[in-house]
Amino acid sequence: MEVVGIDPGNEEVKFASRFGVGKFYSAIGEYRNRNIENAHGKDDIIIEVDGRKGFAGTLALAESEFSGSIMGDSKAHEDAKIRILLALHRLPVDTFQIIVGQPISKHIPREKEAIKNMLCKSHEVTVNNKKKLIKIHKVEVAAEGGAAFWSNPREGLIRIIDAGSGTVNCASLIDGRYIDKDSFTIPFGCKTTKSNDIKEMVRGITAHTSRKWNKTDTVLLAGGAAEKLLPYIKSFYQDTELMTPVFEKEYKKPIFANAIGFYKIGLNIYGSN
Image 1 (cartoon, rainbow, N blue to C red):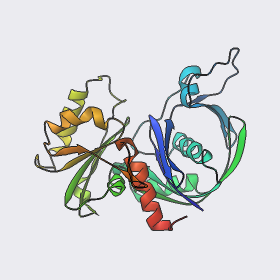
Image 2 (cartoon, rainbow, N blue to C red):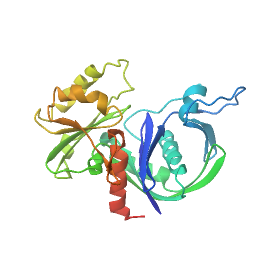
Image 3 (cartoon, rainbow, N blue to C red):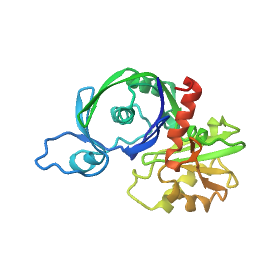
């Protein structure tokens, strides 16, 4: 069975397996018949999952009236299931044991069990007329942000800011041990506010983190917005740097930190493929 780590983000889905890392746009929308069919991007997807047909990716963004992504602090919903199955459909196998993410604030037994029950079964998935029976035999749920640590672990006290489109997960670890009291989810993200002012967003983030963290702490930035946030976070936490996830002895961008962390956790739990 194939081990896969999947970060089903609201902006992009990221995944890691022995076949490599990848990502695609997360948007999901309704299906409709088109009078004029054009290509809108490399992530144009017509999907049918367990009997539900729709558009996804760049096609949903362009052609669905109601396209978008469900935001919030839980991945226990249908859109997250579809994103995860889309990632698995891209791989050249059909039987899986996976690790997926959940925001820290809802990384609780009830929510994790709901995610496992939603995923751990067989699913009929058709993507752009290619039908596949995806069999998920095992599912584990890791904390977003905290799991990113395992993409390139280090010793000492580490703070992680994982800035996503829907939430910002703030994790604390010391020598690889999770510190629950200093870890939390901030209930806004890069795509959930009316303002697009990155500097003000960082002020909101540091207003939360400064209640628990010290200005001298080492902070690592993960997520798709990490590069944009870096200079502003660094003005508050001077010892701040981008996460450098390692996959197959190569450094990857911070956006892949969670997916690679999930994958490495999966290899540890399930064993190698």
